[in-house]
Image (cartoon, rainbow, N blue to C red; front, side, top):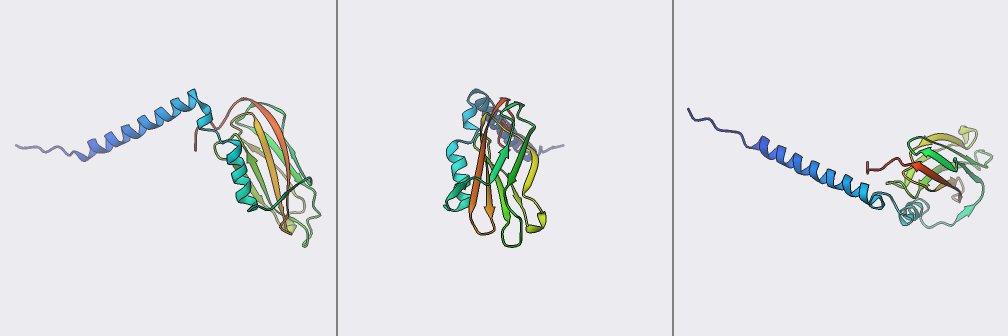
Length: 162
């Protein structure tokens, strides 16, 4: 009796093991040198440039409240408010939140309409490291306004690329 062994499962297992090995190497490298995982200020600037398409961003009208000292970056309360009448002719279209130290700088974007009533958002985010966080509001007339805050994170979150 001649029994043939099926070789493709071995090849699949081998490929899976190679992927696992690469992931382990990446994780070990990130542990030794976390700067390879976190975004840089240039990445945050690029995300802002992509959002605004080169339009000048004005300071003011946007208030970003974030604790100056955070014990655990897994759960950070963030509040953004924009001074706007929220009428049909003058309202906030989008609020973007950018963090320069997270693996992906653009944390979230919230889309609003005049029916939103107010331009106030409270949420929880993950922060990978101590960093500056920006809130950028795009108004209905096409102008952009920004506010920012710095925070010190003692226990980092987001240590691997998702």
